[in-house]
Length: 181
Length: 71
Image (cartoon, rainbow over all chains, first blue to last red):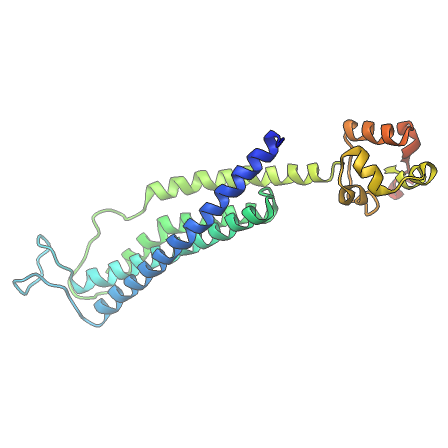
């Protein structure tokens, strides 16, 4: 009769297997988003503009100026690349846990920290990139509505990195337990 | 340093490590880690099971050896 430990281990392994499959699909979507961002950037860099039907650029009407295309292209592709990195690390982590059924290993703790740091970069770097690119002088001026920092992602990443250090301590306890006969 | 001297008792009782692992409920792999020094402690429940299987006292299988840096 399986005890509580075995039952919990089986549930954990099943969930990690599902998560690893989910992150494959999400990574593919992120990769596509990255290429869309690159296309937007290239379109803007080569002087294309998606203008309104009147033929001019009016900020109050839908359409994309050259500078908007470049800025959005850079931020979109940068954000997608960072998100892709985060999801690939998560895929590797969940696949390892599902395979080995040993979640508390130092390598898993390092992967969790990696995901957290990439998410912090995801929250901040696209905003910096947008500020830099939009002042480089492509076409009409484009001023972002806000500073662009994704505060939700940033705070969630800070929570995640804190838990990563707690998880690391759990790995040390697991190692000590493994050495106990 | 505390050392687990299972080999001596296993030889006295003419028992193999495999048989002991079956009696104790600890895998052969984990018992073998004693030889490689990868065991830093023993639970009382495990020590109880080992002593029961080998019909011995804890002092028969536990030995204190001074650490080289203490000498």
